[in-house]
Image 1 (tube, one colour):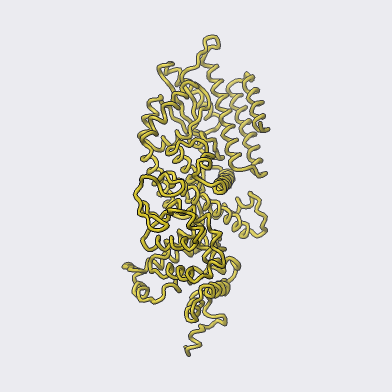
Image 2 (image 1 turned 90 degrees about the horizontal axis):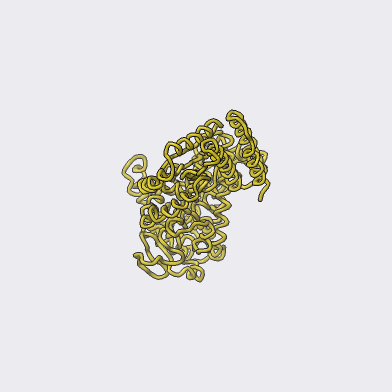
Length: 573
């Protein structure tokens, strides 16, 4: 038992023995909460994990509510004729899964059975609890339902069903709580899995679109954005509904996720909870947008040591984006695999079209035998060539299998002629480069194919006109070039014919990919010279012709190293 838990037990004894008047009790609870929440604040400042602090805060409020419940029962019932009414106080949502940030909702469900006790007495008990909570300054979300009523409501409202997946008994009728547990799954989950999972995945997509559609926005939303807390939570809701997984570790033991990915996912989630903890403290309200104004304060509070505030923010945000990307990739990929019931290879009983080492499933490319990727890493590039050519998505199993084999993409591999030819092919398909680059970048492959690009991953840019990190800015620039193909509206239609006539789109796409690579080493000053050097290194590795090299450096670098247009000088202007 931790020292914090022992403290709660001691205070529990003190509260039970106290015979204070109502006004005294209100002040007592206010002071108690203030003191304990301050202790949690200090624990967080000393580096205690985000998950631990969130759990302890939930436990604190559960103890408070249990004491209030006991006091209310004593006031309403004679000790000699005491019979506990059939009502249970249940924590739902984040409170139920024991994850409370400083401004998180404290969501309560009063569950009752009117046939086992008078309704007027039950409502009086509920009112006493709520009034006392309000008196001590807590804003709680609450609902009161009979057992059959809440089950029916959960089947009409999927948000309610989601909250009940995390329900946990605080105090009250154990018998009624056990009845709820026996009824909930057969009534609300069994036979309704498909509806819930489809809604859950679509709701995630909608939230992602609302908050920028990428992890790498300048001001990310910690809860709802891509790679946010909700992505992680959705994975376990889907696992609970689809596979009856009730303990998170079962994700690993039942082979849905490798241990190293599980550890990355848990570390990332803990980091985001820690950031949210600090943000709520500073905002003094429920607020999950990591604004430019708050990033420096959070970085300082978390102990980032850089003396320069911009460097401090850059380091902090780079860590934030890296963790959010881990959640976005691992949680969503695993959720999709569980939804499709795919642990290792092709899912059973689903439509697939095998060809060679791959198969197409539901408009996604999947791998038939992952070991083939190890034997012949060129298949990794071929997979993305197929994805690009046929407009597919990378399937969840293939995504994980490639991610776990990125070590096979090394310098000697990149020097192979067949590798160079395949890279050229992928970057020569007009209008199709941006999406495949994004899919390769998500799993870290793009930085392996182009080591010059790798340092841009999650690199913060502090210019007003840059809304995204350097890597996301580059991907969006490539997507803009894609949009020129067949563009019919301004301003892109003015360039559509030029793009259509372009003989070698490979160089243009390559130039855009490399144009900002110098930023990683030289963020404060002009970076074009370093980007041009990176372009020359890539050109050498890719065996570009002299003319291609000249075009690439011209597009990436400054006009020329002496301030004049080198090609105009050579051609006489």
